[in-house]
Figure 1 (tube, rainbow, N blue to C red):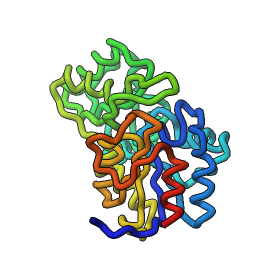
Figure 2 (cartoon, rainbow, N blue to C red; figure 1 turned 30 degrees about the vertical axis):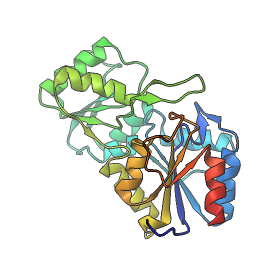
Figure 3 (tube, rainbow, N blue to C red; figure 1 turned 180 degrees about the vertical axis):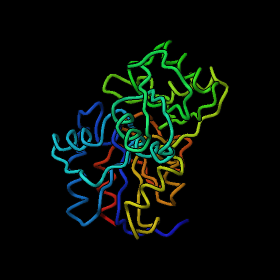
Length: 263
């Protein structure tokens, strides 16, 4: 059993942990306040690639959480897989479009320019409600033409107050199946996202971090990837911790904060 070290950083998922479709989960805002009051940094690590960075900051601010400088998104991780000279077809929301556009010389948004003429160097995929047969066809054509297939995340579902809806991973799976090409995925639990978190947290050691999430595969896998403890909450996608190797299991973020503050 690993030695328990008082955390310096709590890495906190958003969807299913802090909120559901931007509706705060009871106790989550106060939990974050209490962690910060105790001198623990809270960094929000989300596979949401749809919202822009500024939108995430504003949404958290609207519920009383200051987050500027403390957010890492899967859109940001996807951008690390892009080369500046590439022409990129983006099948994703505004957050992914924004981050890829910071890097690539030429960005085409699939649902804004249907049947865009290739070639493309990469197809980058994330959650977006505009996904349809034409987007699938254009993505397939680009990948079959030699483009690298990149997924911001492979989460099959996205939690909402009314239950899960298809996530970015479901869209990515459709393109993967049609093209026969295995994508490079950059968000949690994969290495590109882990590298961004390490850079943001500076000299904080992995054993001084706790990852709080609602998915044992994504969030738990991410915790293992960076060497942090994993605290699993049951307020999001998963209703039980069966099969999870979580270090902490709790009903919600409020209970996790209570446990950590006792340490």
